Image (cartoon, rainbow, N blue to C red; front, side, top):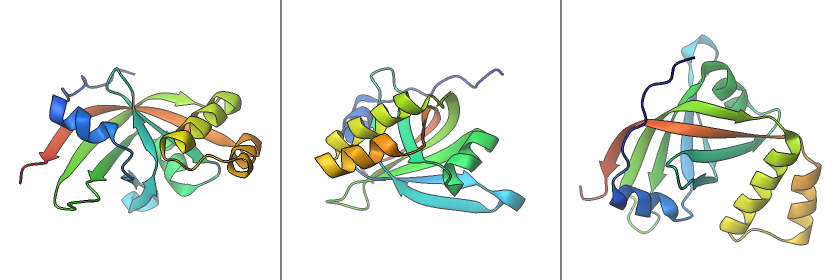
Amino acid sequence: MDLPPPAALPDRVREHLARPLYAVISTVGTGRAPHQAVIWYRLEPDGRVLVNSRMPRRWPEELERERQASLAFVDLEDPLRWVGLQCVVETVVDDVEQARDDIVALSVRYGEEDEDSTAAFRSQQRISFRLRAIAVADHLDD
């Protein structure tokens, strides 16, 4: 499947996304109903966004089926500063061990790693996605 070209991420957007903010992911569900969830993420050096979930959950099932989502990254110190990305799924990581490694790395990024949570993550059915941003809404100076 041909994917749209990636959107350019300006340096200030990259700096914003490099912070351990919480993202709101919006997916499209059955009957085209929108669905949102708050998630952890990581901006990859190549500009893709890594997201991960335990299975089965609604948003990853919708993301795997529809192959598109939007993400909002709100500045916790100034909620009127935010970045929005329209994304398509570039890669599905359904290798459970790799997806478990991804969630453990995300727990470290968010300062939530401890022995119990790592053990729990290592026992769960997990899935990761690498998302390609195809449009950027920059509200960092509004």
